[in-house]
Amino acid sequence: MADINSGFPQNKTVYQRWNIHHRLVHFGIYAPFIVCAITGLPIKFHHKAWAQALASFFGGGDGLLFWHLFAGVVIFLTCIYHLGYSLLWAVKYRHNLTIPMLPWSKGTWTALKQYFAYQLGKSDEHPKFGRYQWKEMFDYWAVFWGMFMIGGSGLLMWFPEFTFQYFPKWFVDAYRWAHSDEAVLAVVFIFTWHFYNVHFQPEFFPMSWVWWDGKMTVDTMELEHGLELEMLTEQQQVMPGRGTISPDKKFPSSG
Image (cartoon, rainbow, N blue to C red; front, side, top):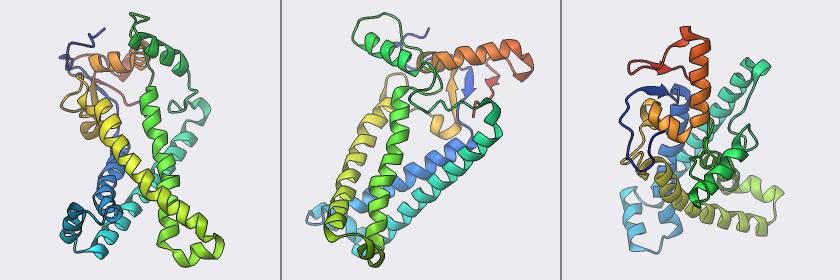
């Protein structure tokens, strides 16, 4: 077991954790999200000097709105792509389907109890997570909540003629405030919680490169996803034709 205080593991044996689809979806979410933040915050805080300077950089309010809407559309299209890819994957593996991102997936609650016992000093055993930790599940489902709250309210504001045909003004006003306040919450969440867990922890600092090449060292896998590593190691022993664990080899992607 890799020592949690030893810094980034030095074993260069790697595991292909993310395939190209995972990386494209991640890019299609985070890049336009940053654009939405840069163009949306000046609209919310338009009375601030920094907001006015940033608006001038984008050519004024119209420029801010254009790039804000453009980035929002990219996020919508990325989510549609992700759902389509996930549906095809589910159909392909429907006879042996597991959905490890669901909070009630096998081993999640046991690992969660182990995690808090370890963090509170009640256990010396580091928790063993499967494909996804509870923090990753939280990040993932937060995107869907954001699409409902931020994306849904954004669509209502984008098409006011349609909106006011079916919704009262008080509802639209409330949703408009929810749009901006939820967006601020999302920005704070991403640049604190997510960035620390993924990039700034001692094991990953200055960043985890999974988002770029999809790879994770076996030592880091043992620390972060011990149950999944055990399963994959067992598969290698049962089906050696799929590859072996060595510095020049990598595990097959688990989708």
